[in-house]
Image (tube, rainbow, N blue to C red; front, top):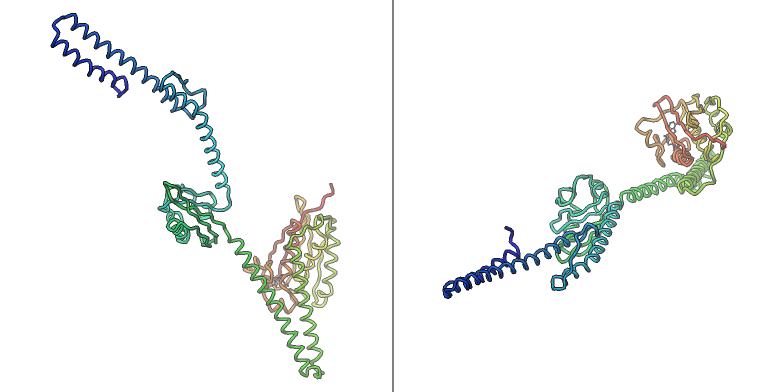
Length: 448
Ligand code: ADP
């Protein structure tokens, strides 16, 4: 039998009644009195049992109610309120129930909201306890450390091999002061903000990690760009200065060479001008300034205009220009940018050609409303390793040759930006020593 109030009451009443009956049996000889004492003792035990049983039932009902306090109201057992102390306790529990329900609801909603916020944060979030075991981490953190298994409860050092983060969190847990630091994690850079997470019963730390690798990459590109620009300007400027000084130091009287000196100064002046103009175009394209709406460009007109512009240079090198049949089509884009892109590609095809070689333009309509414009040449070609890099700013396969033919190293960069701004693509195929083919693909213009 389970220990209960009723059993205890029966035991207590029996223990009190038995000595009383024994005393009667010892000192009273009258059988009727003896029987009466037995009946009286049995009745006392019975009444005690009934009262205790009723109390226990009410307590059990209250227990069942408290157990289901947070369930739906209609699934909870009813509460019986009597007018005694237990009734008062029952009423008090009934009054508390809706308040506790509301509090629990609010807490669980708050918890859900926080979990959703933390889970969807692009910043990586990590919380640890005093022993540096993970107590929470979001998806971004798992992605950053490349671990997608269950994280809760496992030692941080098992999840993250780089010791920097471990050190930062240990410093916070031990010292209590917040720490800000840039660390390396799985080959990326993170700005870490770590702070103590403590209450009266537990101590730990929380860290928010912001991935700064893209910013660092951008800064590096910017630094490289400035270094490249300075370098590009320095050479022609030094040449101009050198030859100007030579002229001033008596070169003006050197009838044989003075014209050559001035021509060199002029060529370098033009070169500086070209670099500045290309940089401006590139900066315009990269700024992504809202252009006017793209419009229809008659392909044949734009291509023929670019071909005419390179004709004199091609003739000078004995190159044959082969323009295939151009379908009567119109593409969607920015006319000036498209013409400039074709011109830059034709210009390269002429510059990096062999004497008496060929330069050609093919235009073809492709399915799904695309138009492909290919500019090909029979020139020096591009090594396979350089093919992925030639669209970078200032990248040249053969620096000396590019300079010699008046290149700035910015032409293909401009072409790529211009074409991508028109939602087009540019690809290149090349065979070293045989020639190259650049292909631009753009959307055909349809008047709806
Ligand atoms: P550049 O002003 O030097 O022509 P570009 O950005 O136009 O600069 O081209 C980058 C480099 O790509 C060139 O220096 C050259 O090495 C290579 N290149 C571009 N077009 C051709 C081509 N048609 N044939 C061979 N090499 C080319």
